[in-house]
Image 1 (cartoon, helix red, strand yellow):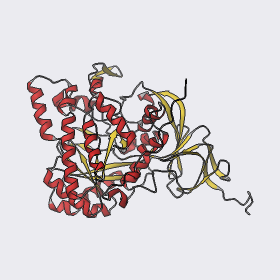
Image 2 (cartoon, one colour; image 1 turned 90 degrees about the vertical axis):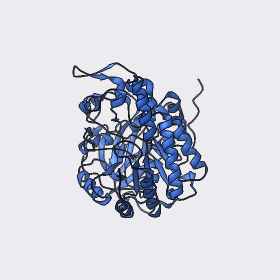
Image 3 (cartoon, helix red, strand yellow; image 1 turned 90 degrees about the horizontal axis):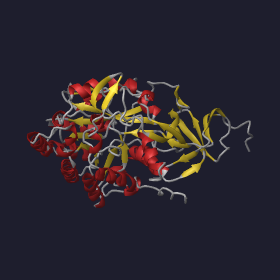
Image 4 (tube, one colour; image 1 turned 60 degrees about the vertical axis):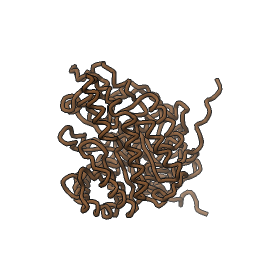
Length: 499
């Protein structure tokens, strides 16, 4: 029998909290040694530690994973997103891992990947990985590099179905075939370019130029048409498919139909689409920053794909709760007001977009869903951490509080009442679409691989210590038929207490 004086001294013990997993919640203490979780202990039994974090009254959850961000990305000269020096904002919001993008344009995919890794290496506060985007008229030689890209730890390959990086369906099918052969996951930005362009010209002729009309010219039809094409091509290629930033209820239906036939198809939505609709884009209130008027506030709510309508928003909420959609991400794309309002324009035919959302995603979803009784804390953890880890090849090291996993841990205060104020955020822009929103629940402490980065709201750790993570997809993610249990929601939210 080992005496208490002989017990190992852990590096860190998080004591007194409720550990939230993807299926349940338990009162447990968490011990950390080095970069990994070394034990889950009944309360008070973890033993001594060099540092003890008192989590009494708090939830202890895995570091969140945002699989859709853009740092330091030049969008064809129109705008440049904030750089990796702002990635600490993600940590403030409880996100410890992100996946960014390598846009293949002038070089082959492997060289593009190497360049992007060199750009981000040593400058990210979070751990990070990369998706590769094949753009425009990519060649047979580019497609032949997909296997090497996947073996290099980036098994998620995206193509665009609209905008300046658009590729045609022949190339998309060829890429999907190669992705399937090498155990990867195809990704798409799904909007039908031809329908969108036709509607754009129709509305222009009719004089419908208000920015909010973009929700109609790029409405549910535009999104559904592209999603159904992408699902068809992926099925014929034998590739699993992950549909990025789903905004339309009709697109949810299409993905759900494919999943009901056992196909390995997945979808994410964004915190913006759970919040905003076309009605918000009609807000004509001037955005005033430091005494300067930048134009209607409604412009800030746009993204591409565009927010749709209240019925679409409600269907997105239903879909993230019943597993028709598996992930809530951000498409974080933080740009200057000059780029948004002046370079990109303010009407339907020159619409600007991009959300500064990575810092608020975890807290927004808790406040809007868990605190209101709409979903359980376990489902919240699935949507922000476990499911992205499972689907993107980051599990079992990330996405769950488990022995042997990376010590990416968030202590979350579920009772904290606060109001969003852009001046207290840590992203680059002097505004927030959620400014003034009242919130319940706040990130208190954050550890990334055992290093304390946030201590009771204060950033105390490294802002450049994030590691590049090589990813390998689990066979059950790419398997056909689909195993729906890997992302299925756990217990429902508890019923509200009787008045």
